[in-house]
Length: 444
Image 1 (tube, rainbow, N blue to C red):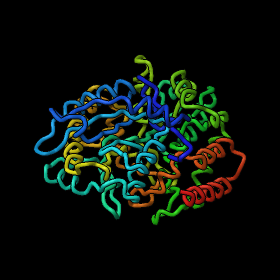
Image 2 (cartoon, helix red, strand yellow; image 1 turned 180 degrees about the horizontal axis):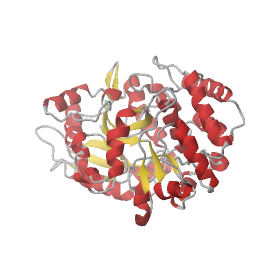
Image 3 (cartoon, helix red, strand yellow; image 1 turned 30 degrees about the vertical axis):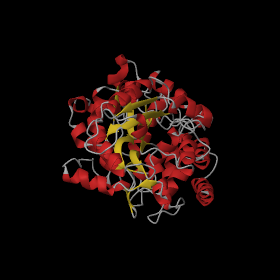
Image 4 (spheres, rainbow, N blue to C red; image 1 turned 45 degrees about the vertical axis):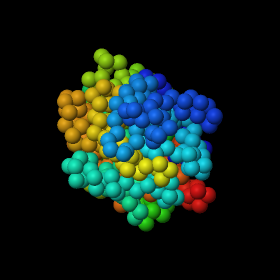
């Protein structure tokens, strides 16, 4: 996430963790960091280690459950207890970077997907290698394919995963039937289905491209990866202007010209898009795995996950954001940090059992639970989409620090708005993005 962008959470609403809102650092600290609870048996708060947790899933109900789980932690041996603090997404970047600069970071924290990579590089985060070894020895390393590997860097594991923000293709079954359209399986059939939806006044590819949301950025990233492309090379350098990327933008331009993408989507907020989904004016689109839960109960069975699309060269893929648990070097006890994270990973299944988490679980033991197995959309997301997922640094073997600088920043927002507006060539748009991303990374 870029320094000028901010996240928002709406209480009781399962909305994207990457919805943005400007806000003040003082308000963030007052609203979020004041919400504390102590855990760890008879340990006093002063001897506890600090655990910061972002406001995930369903907002207030998620936080209440997280505080309850953390509050049940009882340390063993000489390990310390924990003090739980809920941290809002508003101004999260400044909250963490200011804490790092003043060496007041917590011992353990959840956070934005690429934050631990930047902090590991700067020395603010401790590698999780010893913790991973403990999970291996205890038989608890059952992370889904590729997720733990994506956390590995030349300096060690930047963090461990705890949930997964994955983008999948959704469709409204009744609306496709009304249009006489088949569920698409590749890009050509997607255009065919979108064209039929347009004829009945329905948008075929729902997107929100305003500066207050990163929804459209995720859709474009998913399609770039679907075509074997991406914005970075294997060596982590910016590499936007490639044949595969041009081809992907040409596909999106065709969607714009045929009215499959709504022309006004460049100014759409996440609320606009959510309304369009529920009122039936959007028939297909990429979204989080909890999209169906945002619909009224009577409509939820009509909202379904499609199988992954096959790109023009036979590629399949999508974008994901691995939500991390990271350990900071400011901890008064690294062994206490590792002991708590190991314990916490044993208890995160409670979020899904309670229905307060809208992202995918990252552990096979959780995906085997009845609450997941009984949901066809989640089963398809886990079995068909998750193994194909990659970060926005798709071609690199793992995520890296620069992604934290450019993710969701102004350059990416301008990029998707230019695509939706359809007034420039694909190559021109990518050349502009290349220059902007290089400048953002150089600035740091």
